[in-house]
Image (cartoon, rainbow, N blue to C red; front, side, top):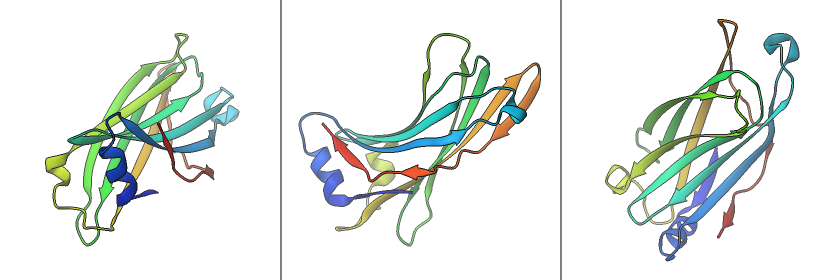
Length: 156
């Protein structure tokens, strides 16, 4: 889970240009050659993008697989003493082309998050990702577990 202070979020919202708060998970998932008949390393990272009236959470990954992949993402916005706000997204990618950066994204509007944060509280979210690889009509799925974590940084 990545935590951004309310002060960081408000400072980003009040700037004239879009600001991304970025948390990077590097080397989060190593593909098992025996399981997937493929080898390589995926790099995962999460980005929070703030605008005047909403914010988006994106889950990115980079890596080549030479097959079709589906990403299922569950984005949870966590609130103190309240039920989380959950959004689910699913996206299919054809990794046989040359592109190697993929994104699954969801948006939370100001109305959805209204009155959810008290002064001094943190913005907390969790993202659960499931990758489904299709290879010769066989499906395999794996849930990535971030191994290396970095503190969130503000990019301008």
